[in-house]
Length: 235
Image (cartoon, rainbow, N blue to C red; front, side):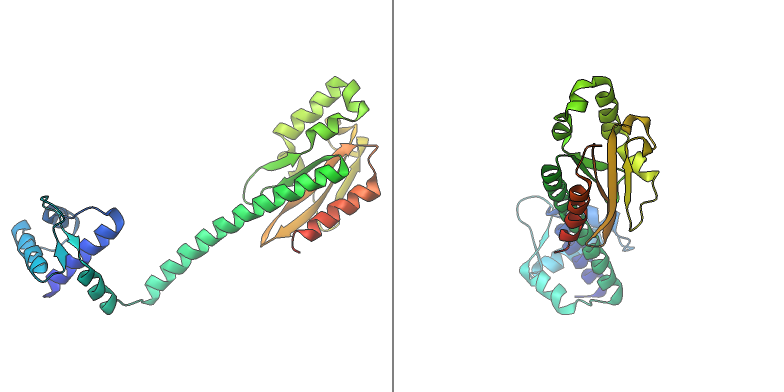
């Protein structure tokens, strides 16, 4: 097998790996710069077929690699640094996506538990996205002050649903976290609420987790719950 036939075989193998479809001489001629005519490519493919390296699965003009072709490729492959670097980048990219998916699931579970034990709206920012998810609206609405003042309640819900992420961006939330009670909040819509938030870190991802509830909330218990929930993320 000469060098040109080897290139044609590599082209057939690479294309078939990607497409799972038989490859014809016309495709090789148009897709690879071999500086030969289509007739020459057809002759080379005939030689490769005669050598048992490609076969014709049906009556079409396309050919597919045989097991012998794969063996030849494996026996002569060179896993150079460029190839290894590409694979490493692909693996790291997919691993990051998997870790992000797990992080979202863990955060959602943690926020759900936190809302249950505190009776407040629990929230967390989503790593890498300008979004925040929250749980516990129904628990907030059970408080009598929100049940009776529908206008105030509507204002609170609108901020939670539409602008909570931007509100959190306005705060400088360091390791100490924040805790605003009633009118201490920067938004008049939250004047009947208390807001606490702490930074979290999980699997290399960072964000903010917190609680929003009535000013009548049990502050020591809720703050301890928030801090403990964040600690448990990594246990």
